[in-house]
Image (tube, rainbow, N blue to C red):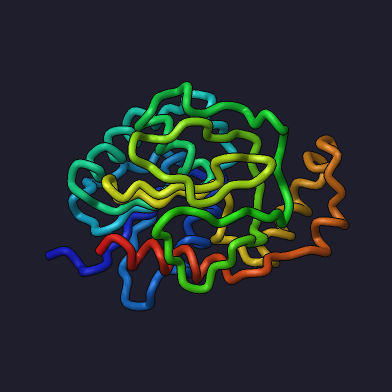
Length: 230
């Protein structure tokens, strides 16, 4: 028997870091299973779960991964079965590569986006409790989505990356380029770890570490996903 909220987390990170960040935002009564896809763990049958989540990764969506075919089947199986899916950063880009094709993703035309950056929340009929029209969130990506699945609607945008998020109600997908799973400490720890990459791209570590989010992004977006497609 399927638990009412039984979530599959597909973790694409090379260091297994994303799964725990996702799990902490799930409801207390929610059962979850994390599969470390990059490490080669087997992806279970989608039908055993009520929701699926796809994490970020340091991998580039523009490069083929060994697991791509298996993940593609998983995403399409969830769509066919009406299982809600949430994707963040790499997961966000993965949805579009699977549902639209490789031409829907590319290297960011504006280069690396990293820091606590503003996004504009938009969308007709979108009602996300606790959100602001302009929200400062964690960003760290060098790839971007440039084309959406048919019927999908942009819900977040910015000067750097036009498609910062979309919702596809017919396919039950919530997709975000930015990272709501990161709190300020998590984000600043990662920025420190990636100091050299930031400096190579003209981004000052001290400046971005002095900043931080202005919304409780994890609670807002994960709660919205878990309650929107019941």
